[in-house]
Length: 132
Length: 132
DNA sequence: ACACTTTTTTAGAATGGTTATAAACTAGAC
DNA sequence: GTCTAGTTTATAACCATTCTAAAAAAGTGT
Ligand SMILES: [Mn+2]
Ligand SMILES: [Mn+2]
Ligand SMILES: [Zn+2]
Ligand SMILES: [Zn+2]
Image (tube, rainbow over all chains, first blue to last red; front, side, top):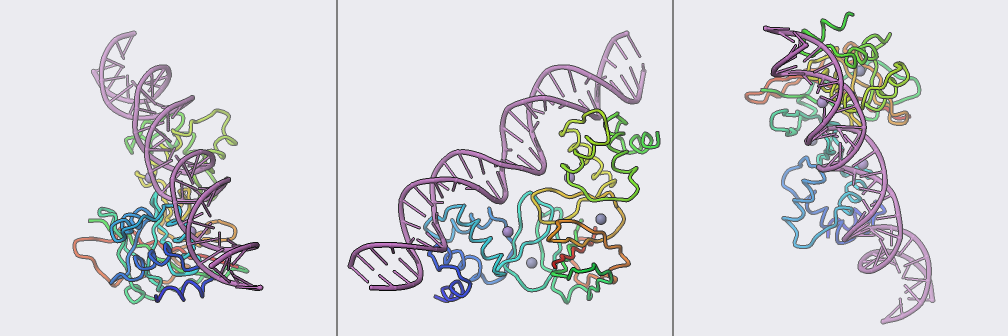
């Protein structure tokens, strides 16, 4: 199993639940955006056994901390995650309530001119809201 | 009172509560970022009478809908608002959990090259996360 | 295989920001 | 003043997320 080593290298025990969540998240054809609720439904559909909601939360947060998932800053009552961990940006379709990837090449280079003493830039994220 | 007309023009009745919230929000020296909880505390400190939490929520959402406040896309369990409604961006200091304005001139021009059929861009927001 | 420790899973409870409810109140129109 | 639609309010409800503590599983050593 290809995820066993990945988890071990991260100091996470390769449990059955974590490996199954890896499959759902990282074996998909394309990267995708999801909420915890989305993911729980996907797991229920794709897998025959049940994974408790607490474990899904724990695992997603553990993966996010290890850098295997990204959290997307957006105004929503639910937290959005992204399996695309490359440096990229997003369209947010307000009508459809859907996120669409904007590759770095789809956005001109972003140059932050202001500096804050003693702080360094960790990430730069662009959210482009779309209307009809 | 300078806010009476503003509210009337927006189709909002100039109630005592709304006028007082206007004062707290828009009479400040500088624009500022706040959560509903922040605002409720500020109101309690600055005003002698109490405004119910439901009214604060209602008013903030009404003002946001009218464009007098902006909601800031950020991952937090609380919603952040901004009295600075100019087109601008934000630093988010992860350690201090504080937002800092980035004027448009502090960020190079942003050119979104990708187009989505039938959709137009409503806003472009940049969030720059800061770490030590 | 077994004993032992640490990590993980789990169901369910608790938390907390936000929204809904419905009754009392108020602003504006006539 | 009367009337009506809009607003405020306390409180309940909602619901995404986190916490709890007990059971299960994983890793380690023998
Ligand atoms: Mn997280
Ligand atoms: Mn709103
Ligand atoms: Zn993405
Ligand atoms: Zn701002």
